[in-house]
Amino acid sequence: MDSKGIGHVGIRAAVTGKLIPLHKNVFVTDMNFDEQVTSSGIVIPGDDGKDTGIKPRWGRVFAVGSEQQDVQVGQWILIEHGRWTRAIAHIDADGTQRKIFRVDINCMLLVSDEPPKELSFGLSAIDLSPPTFDFHPE
Image (tube, rainbow, N blue to C red):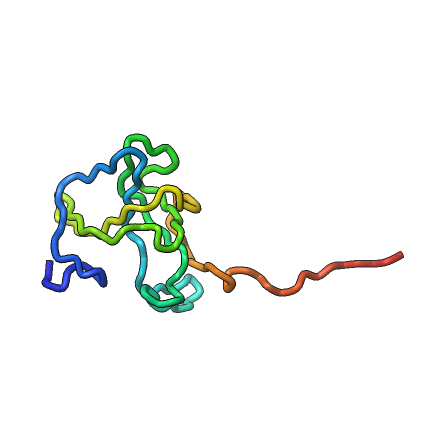
């Protein structure tokens, strides 16, 4: 690991070995804070630490506690904004390095077996055009 750490969080030390959350806790990985490109080619700039970054985030479940029954390892969960811890660096036995976050289990909004394809949240994701009615008075 270089002296700058992993990504923008500046982690300088790493945990190795198997991580086992206690009770109902959930650890996630693969949370995306970087620039993203939708399938239609729209570039969504990295927004961590900005007002536009205040939105729910998807994360892939890395590990679950023995009492957790809502989600399973490998599933994707949508988490309310900011309801995760700072990242810790984890290094697997094969040398794979990743950032792990513990999420607030009361703030999991959605669960999916498939990775999210496109991200759209907030008012931009809602059709705000006035409804149309086909009204024919008799």
